[in-house]
Length: 188
Image (cartoon, rainbow, N blue to C red; front, side, top):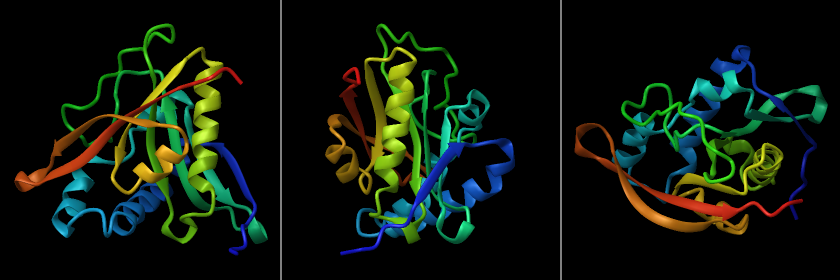
């Protein structure tokens, strides 16, 4: 049985950008192995990434390894009250800052990444709980995300079901398979 380390969490700030990008790069490169080809992993770097609007909105969480006072980023992810479903600052044509209506629209679960050293230790579930609780507190009754194939098992385990499978166009004609998933946010 694995030993689980204590984790803390907080809202990300602009000072965290470089560290967050480093964790994202590692997660994209390592955790998609076995789910995507090397070419698709390389292409996914153009499709995925950090949308700094989440940090500006105060809806992006960092989970840190609290063991030994290290404060090392174990994972991150956020939720949004904006129309953008996925993609980072560099993703062209994917971003839409229009506000969502909690009465009719689904909150967006966004930019979920776990540092490979902390995979399968509850970090993703913790981030999901933080995001869902915050979206629910903001009045949302549903949540949606665009999941990677490597993230799908976690999201299914958290109660998300597939809505549609898509191929996100990447560079050099390489597409990245993604799954739009959704879940009802039951009042807690």
